[in-house]
Every structure is written in C-alpha cells, then in structure tokens.
Image 1 (tube, one colour):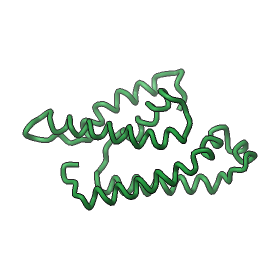
Image 2 (cartoon, rainbow, N blue to C red):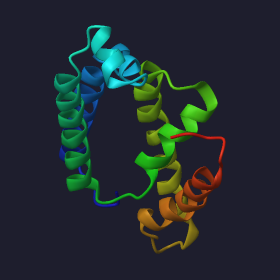
Image 3 (cartoon, rainbow, N blue to C red):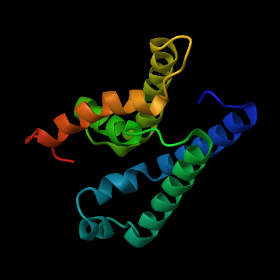
Amino acid sequence: MSGASWRAVCVVAFTTIVGTLIALRYGKQLNALMIGEEEATYLGVNVSRLKWIILSINVVIVAVATAFVGVISFVGLIVPHILRMMKGSDNRFLIAGSALLGAIILTLADLVARMVLRPAELPIGVVTSAVGVPIFLYLLRQRQYVF
C-alpha cells in the first residue's frame, strides 16, 4: 500500500463499490442458499445462475484488489467469520459489514506496519499474517463454531 496512487485507489474503489452493490442485491438469495441448494430452488432461487454471478463478482473484486495492492493475507478470510460470530449469518449484513470491517482492519494494519520499524516500513502482509494466523487457528480449533 506504500506505493499506492490515486489512479489505483480509484480503480480498486470503483470495482469494490460496484461489486459490493451488486452482491448486496443477491443477499436474500444467498440467505436462502444457506439452507441448501434444493431448498433454495424450492424458494425460487436459480442456484446455478446465482453461483456464477457471485463467483464472478468475487473474482473481479479480488483480482483487481490483488493486482493493485498485492497479497494481503487473511483479511478476506478472517473478517467475515469475526462478523458472523458477532452478528449472525445474514448475508445482507455480512457483505457490507465485511467491506467496512476489512477496510478498518487493513488501515490499522497499515498504521502498525508504518510505525513498528520507523523509519523503515514493514510489509503489510507480515502484520496481517501475524494477527490473522492466530485468529484463524482459533476459529479452526473451536468446535462449536461452524463455517
């Protein structure tokens, strides 16, 4: 993130905002899909179409963000699970909440990366991994939490 430019910020922001808005439109259908594909079909959800749309949105958002920012480990894996433990599994909340909490965590990680080894800068992936790995291991070891 130290080499960010306004052009990169605009491209990543545009794809993230548009992708998130499109994904929010499918929040209810994703909630129906959580009870099972067959049950979602009974509720009128075109499951195969929904899978392709959501997969395409996610691929575009992740590809653009990774191309401009680089690999920032565990933020995308940990944030939805933290929110799911706090507020439940409503995808309408998780989509927007993950975007906001992910941005907050990434900003804090960037601050830590810039301040720990002043005047040098620690790679932000080191900070996110140092925080994300213990949380991820905790989630994996916890038997009562279901992904």
